[in-house]
Image (spheres, rainbow, N blue to C red):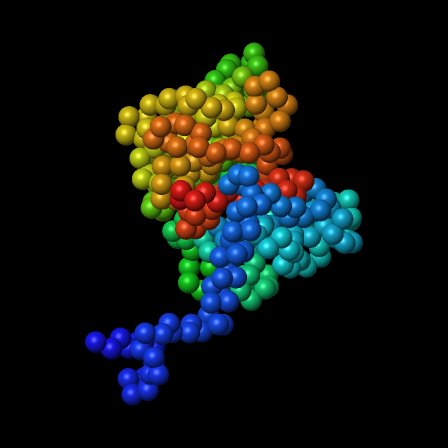
Length: 383
């Protein structure tokens, strides 16, 4: 029986039915080049971490999008210290963002509050150096400043966009004048109203941890810190910070649409970061250098067998990316990935001065960037 080549016409005359068919040279070249690049990259790596210099100089603040775009304010980028976007994987600057009446002081590298939208179309930012005390929103598709919203008196400590893209929140300190505000994201050209949809001050039912006459302001409410929306976007968790070196912070759970309190958890020590697990049933939080898991059904917390100051839970799997600024018997810190089922550290790499970390939108990679401009990309073959 004659065997026909499926890629040749049926009526083509075959001089030798048993001969090997010649493959298209260009197709083989393209496929082979990709395999070679992947092989060379893997051979050059002795771990699942790629380390790159993302920007020169030092930035007090930085934020990574779920697509691997880094926003930073590196020193030495010109006459004005502007927000600059970098591609962490390509290792190249993308563009600089500016606002009207921006400070031209080259030494002005003040801290900023930054938040990316899902998919990295929008960036919301605030800087003390900017003339207008308001949140600025940039559209990266049109490469322009869309406008401002949410004017503030107290500079925002944290900004957070829900993973579903439906809500945005801003938290500030200021003690009795601290605020937690939220917006619904609209479909208009400017996705936010000028004024927040919901706003709250001192948490309902708050009680001082010390007697004011004896300790002054210690033990009193300091303001709102770390923020995290639940995976479904319906609940907002915010840290209520307390003044004093030995004070204990709390996590307040709020309805994202109304900011009505649905629960509160009293922690131990100052809480530096919070994150929801992918199934929304638990939270990982970091307090006083220790990592904990909080089961939301019982509101009971367990200390985990590792320390951490920052954490980022995987969007689909029971994995968590963490950073600890110091290790036992070492002055250096580490980035590491932990399996939340077994609580085993599955991979790690030495790192210092980490400013931001997160998983990409698909959960195939994790990113981290330091204040000194070093970028870390975690890409495990097991994910």
